[in-house]
Amino acid sequence: MAADHEYRFSFGPWNIGEGADPFGPEVRTPYTFAKKLDWFESLGFEGVQFHDDDVVENLEELSPEKCLEKAREVRKVLEDRSLVAEFVAPRLWFHPQTVDGGFTANSAADRQYALDRTLRTIDIAREVGTKAVVIWLAREGTYIREAKDAKLAYERILETLNKMLAYDPEISIWIEPKPNEPTDQAYVPTIGHAVAMAYQSDDPSRVGGLIESAHALLAGLDPADEMAFALAHDKLGSVHLNDQNGLKYDQDKSFGSANLRSAFNQVRVLDENGYGKRGEFIGLDVKVMRTQRQEGSVDHLVNSKATFLHLVEKVRTLDKDLERQYIEARDYEALDAYILRHLMGISS
Ligand code: 3MF
Ligand code: MG
Image 1 (cartoon, rainbow, N blue to C red):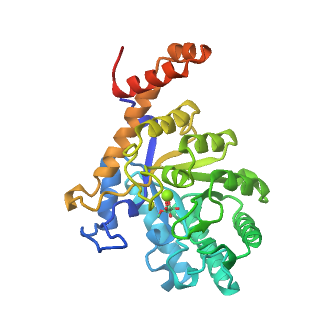
Image 2: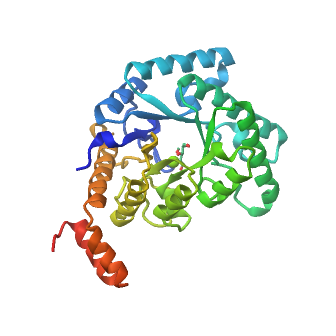
Image 3: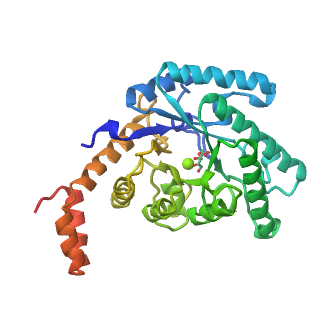
């Protein structure tokens, strides 16, 4: 198996969850943040992904100074354990003032709330020790298209990106595209949209994307090709590897669980293009099955990481000569069969 230390892994505290879904409550008891950090260490995950309120609980109730002090405390806790914050993302979908979205809300007061909270997230990111801010545009969309002016919405998103860039000359913004859920129709649904917005921004070099496998699948796109597109533009800040069984609710299944070949191709595009060599993380945005008992709360993380490393091995042990021969002969049937045999571990 490929060596762990060649890749840096990350996930967010929300990935150790209690199993609540829209039809039922929690089925496992929550673990403390400290216990979750124990797992980061013991399972070999160096990077911690945060929402702003994962770093500073109840941040709305604290003064800006107190909030930054708390963020510095978290940084110290991470440093003591040799962990690092990978990014911080403003949680712009929970608060009453984000019901109609943040940057694209029809209410000017709500848009101001979203901007203020995002700039505060940048302050938190700085204090907790990362220069990356992720923007998942959760409610920036509509349930019926007539509810918002879509062109104006894109202008407003761009305006926010520019305000963020101007606020702190050192931060990078990674847009995490998703085509739907919780809204029906979301703005910036694919990495192509995100990259276009990056080029349109005041500092394209500081705007990129974070690609989540399931989000690409929900858009009917191939996650590996989405990653290739971002890599071709040098705009792949991070990834959220997971899986998704068709066009359903956002499932966040373990990596490779629904489509092992798609997972193989994601690992292939990352590994063959040197992703990770500049410190980029292999992020996992996976959810354990609701049926899992308390003691199995992190099995999905263990399994996803192991699958990733096994697939790195599969990528590196592919017979390149054979692959080239099949491609030169335009014998894609033979190539197809060879890939399947290779994934199944059949040597002849
Ligand atoms: C939703 C997501 C989010 C983002 C997270 C970080 C809760 O489908 O994937 O997870 O990844 O907010 O930006
Ligand atoms: Mg995600």
